[in-house]
Amino acid sequence: MYAPVGVATSWRRLRHTAVLALGLVGCHWVRSGNPAVVAPVAAAQVKAVGDCAPCRDSVDIVAMGVHGFLMVPWRDSTELVMTPPSYTNPTLPWMLFGNWLLGSHPNSARIERRLRDLSAASFNRLAQVRAVLVGHGHYDHLMDLPYLAPYLPNATVYGSSTVVNMLAPARGFAGRLRSVDSSAGIDASIPGQSIAIGRTVTVRAIAWAHAPNIGSHVIARGERTTPRTALPRGVFGWKLGRVYAYAIDILDADGLVGGRIVVHDAAAPPDVVQRAAAVIGTFPAARSTTLIITAANFDQVPQYPELLLTLLAPTHVLLGHWEDFFRSPEKPERVVRGIRARTLADHLTRVQGSRWTALNAGATLRVRW
Ligand SMILES: [Zn+2]
Image 1 (cartoon, rainbow, N blue to C red):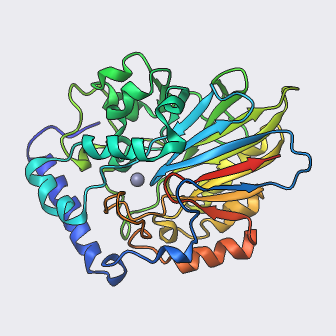
Image 2 (image 1 turned 120 degrees about the vertical axis):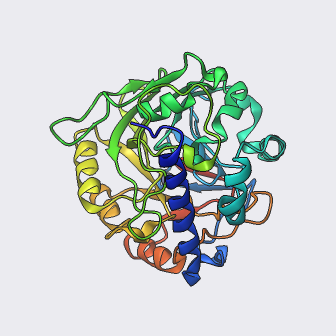
């Protein structure tokens, strides 16, 4: 279901812009926040976690920017998994004015510079990525991905059918786009199917949801049911589609699950969190569970992320989507506008103690078990 070009599309664009403009009126939208509140690990640094001596195995999780993460299993560094980074990051004034007039497209020069600068997400490593996991179709997760296709020659992109249809014109991914709509877990009675990424890594998609961006409004809501013939012209052409969390399982030599990474890229309401936790409850037990949560819009739904932390009892929590993505990633990171990061940090500390981490782009969390 998609709008024909014309009045409906113009009306939608106008509505999206009006909502953004209204959002700016709220004072906590005007300024981004001080990153000291989440104490991010500096770029190029490695923080190791996990109580094990001796440790049997580990996975490196490299922050690439916004909600982009590169997962590098220690036992087999040819089976990497990635979530898409965002580098172009249109500014708010651009979103309000420039996007209308000129559209928004990947900033190729900036993407190239970032990939060169983030040595932990080197070109060699990107060439070993087998799976790119897309949680939903918004521009801050998808707009830069087509540009990265040549650097990801061995990767298949997994996401909703909306994601697959929107990326159809990206020739670099031809034949490498897979919908997870029919294999995703829904609840404990429909736990879904696992996808073998390689010998040591499996992935499962789990039905998830997207908290409102502002008030009760989710931007660019909707699906794309037929393949596009050209990539979207502007940020609001990247439609939400169905939303998924993913469980990435790294298997031990004995075939049991060593490390599990559960990742989602939007805050979700309690009923969705409960169903997703029930799906995960049907999976084989893991020695270590790392949960990647979403800072952006966390306070637009109740009990996020505390309910999820309580239900999953993760070994460690990694804070995703915490940077201000209306700002160049080549400037020092600031906390995303529109959230009260101190409150989030307090929630995390109350449930997790010190077992949570934020990373600057280029930093690594090494999870051992
Ligand atoms: Zn989104």
